Amino acid sequence: MSTQASNTRSESTADHAAQLDVLGDDCARTILMATSEGPKTAKELTKRTDSSSATVYRRINNLLESDLIAECVRFDDDGSHTTAYEATVDVLRVRIDADGIDVAVSDADE
Image 1 (cartoon, rainbow, N blue to C red):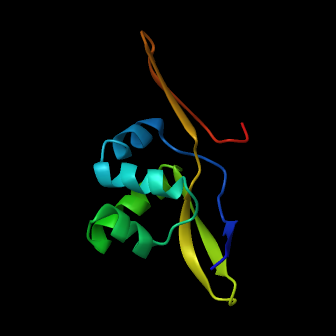
Image 2 (cartoon, one colour):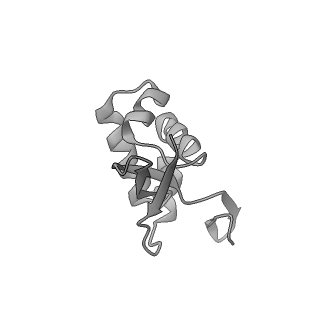
């Protein structure tokens, strides 16, 4: 089965503290790692995390709100399509100094 994905990502307005908070959750980190391999459906992510679908959807929403993943449409060869999720970051750098904590997020294109 060959698939193509169309990303519906908008401009980032994420709160860096929220990004760090969401990464404190094991299920969210597993989702982020899985979606860095390519678009995954919520059903695929539920299997990957061994969590309930309700938990996976909550973590997906947290990751979406933090701009760490984006929703996309995955098209299959047979013309069917489904909602999938894909990581929007490759690198997350955290700098801690006297002025506070700074988070820099970048993807492969930056």
